[in-house]
Length: 461
Image (cartoon, rainbow, N blue to C red; front, top):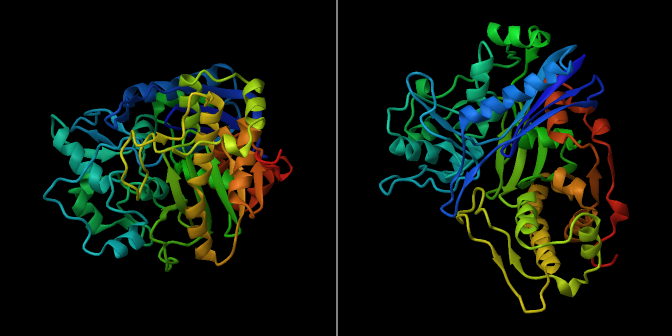
């Protein structure tokens, strides 16, 4: 059986075909870049119709090349936290708010949860601009037309393709409106958001599967009988794809942004383990949760520096980084894109200090890259407090695959923990496929976890 894995990210849409061994079929990949609207005011939006077109283009490309033959399952890894207002005709009333957008704020007259700690334990989230409890009133006040419903980006896209597109428990938990134990919308969170049940997506039951609408089944006949599984939040999918599937191993993933997460089995309706104040908790599926922290800064920091600092290219840059000494680092605050919850810094809060006329672009880059490493430490300690022991760390994501120096910097910053590297290049797609096939327990082998460059560090190499 082949699996079509869709990776519905913020910066790109990708479709790839995996074999029964959950390994990518060589050449069976289609990708489209997404144009984001970002500015210094904290805007982070994208166009829903344009995004859907990119998804359709990927599927058309794979179909034309014959890669969709023998696909029986479609698995989806999708960005968390996005929200889109729809009118009575089901069409978008504006752009999609992504996790990057730091503009939403509560109205001056609004007050938060009656018991913030109990709210945090129930929903795994806070009353924060990243979540629908703050975003929906802010969006409603700015829409020029009445809002009939709010959906996430993935629900909008799938509603166009499938005969039925309820919201998965994983995606619902990322809204901040879900009681992650009862798996129903939380009444207090919905009251803060100012929404009733008919304004929110229907929730997918356990073992839900979708099918293509007839028009798209004719467009892609090879997918006509394929089952579509509930979308998994990209962070949860990356944990599974990294082989971090129990309390002994945490995933540190650096793609466009970055995160540290621990996956545990906590079935629906069972008591949840206490959640530390600084961490969030979302659903993977009806049986598992992922607990952790996320950051706006990751590979996007490198991309900004590469664009603006006239850095060497390719191997020359990696060699220049290895040539630095510990004294070459510069103090840095990597909050260029603001804070993810529970932090409250807005976009544009980054700082780079200790500059002189002799400071080089590579030294500035090294400070930024170390800053991305160092933001993880305190939250990793909080995660370890929930299991009462140090954990092994597995690095993953495109940024980690691209730079041995950056991997070594993580080894240095996270010492004395064992830090390893998941060499599988498609952790999000792989993780979504493993969840869809109910094979989470098999995740370690395809993750291809190995040593991180013999545990060397930039300061000693």
